[in-house]
Length: 215
Image 1 (cartoon, rainbow, N blue to C red):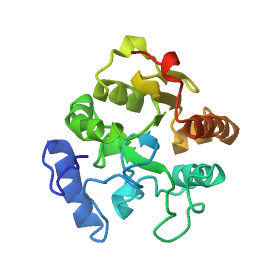
Image 2 (cartoon, one colour):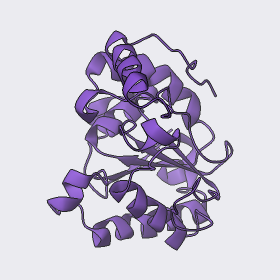
Image 3 (cartoon, one colour):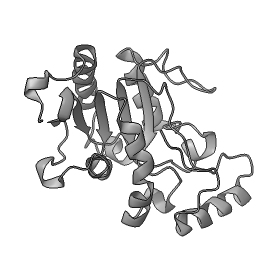
Image 4 (tube, helix red, strand yellow):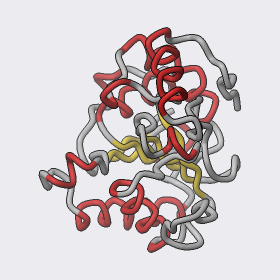
């Protein structure tokens, strides 16, 4: 796996924002956020980018209040975390790793294509160990498909969709558990839970039978 350097300068817009955040919040992490969880995990959860007062502050993915609380509760409920998120450094992950498509905080939580592409080699280096890839949101889905070297038209994002990958691996789609999606009920807790029920089944099974996966 390849991590971006602490002072990565691939994206000028993100570098400038990083310096502004450090000035405004001297105690914040305000640097590329590395993945969280064991490197050999069978489940890899892929989000979009750090939030200003979440991972950008703590250095740990999904440590913001609303989306972080929900995803860590789901991970706990389905056996991938030692507990739900608490006020300290967070739970221990079990057979699960969490990463983001873009490692640095983007303005308005919206990375542009150039920034997504600049971070894609780091994402690609993280995908190999996982049997199940749980991807949160359409932008993250496209970045993962690109990192896998596959055609977008063959694997179209849809909430709850499953995409067979070579070797019996599986890519599972979900709407992102963002505050906006939760508040507008585009994604509900029940919908998210159903995704995790399926993810748990796939992880326990080790993926799809090789005969059901593309060559």
